[in-house]
Image (cartoon, rainbow, N blue to C red; front, side, top):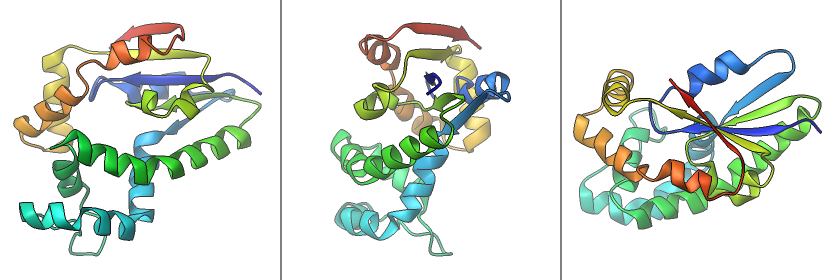
Length: 183
C-alpha cells in the first residue's frame, strides 16, 4: 500500500487549493467535507429524527424545500453546542470512515491525501496516515475567503473559527510528523 497523508488546516485556509496542486497520476485525494455532505444526505432520516426537538425549539427546519437536508440550518444548529456537534458526528462518522477506508483500498497503489479539517476526531483514519500536511493562512484572509465562499454572516464564520481554534495543536498531539504549508 502506498502512503496515506492527512491534508488539513483551518476553515478557508486553502486545503482544496493545496490538494489540487499535489494531485497527479500517483497521488489522489478524498475530500472528507464532500464525503460528510454526502453522508449527511444518506443519513437524512436519522439526523432529522435525532435533532427534531432541538430544531423545533430553535424554530429551524432541517429540510430544504426540495426535501434534502438544509446544511446551513443543520450547521447553525450543531455548531451552537459541542454536545449537538458530537451527536451529529456519532451519526455521520462511522459511514465516513467506511467510505474512506474503501477509497484507500481502491487506490492502494497511489499516495492518498485525506483532505479533512477535523480528521483527528476519527482516530481510525488518523492511524492510517504517515504524516500531516497542515495548511495555514492569516486570520483575515480566511475570514474574507469564508465569507465570499459561503455567503454566511461573519458571526457564524467566527463561531466556526472558534470551534477550530486549537486545530494545529490537536494534530501535533497525534504524534505524526507535521509539515506546515503557508498559503
